Length: 102
Image 1 (cartoon, rainbow, N blue to C red):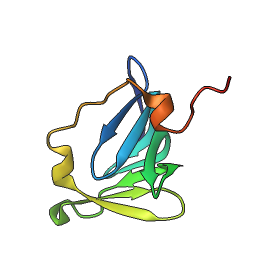
Image 2: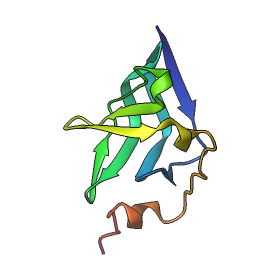
Image 3: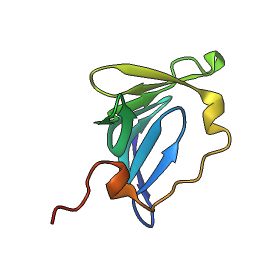
């Protein structure tokens, strides 16, 4: 087991099947086929932003990746990750419902 830590220039958002938000630092414990205790990654589900707690590939031949969002598990196709989408930093606060209060 190891520790994975990724540093991005700034927080950003990408679109797979749903929108995914990356903090400027994403951390996880790395084991074979699994990222556990994930920090810095959230996924939009039914208009809510839920932290992704882990990512698992149980059977690589299935072509599925399992996202643990705490209250549920979401399966995504491995093919979505073959060509990673652009992670866009602009307009994040507004898109996530954090509009500035005046």
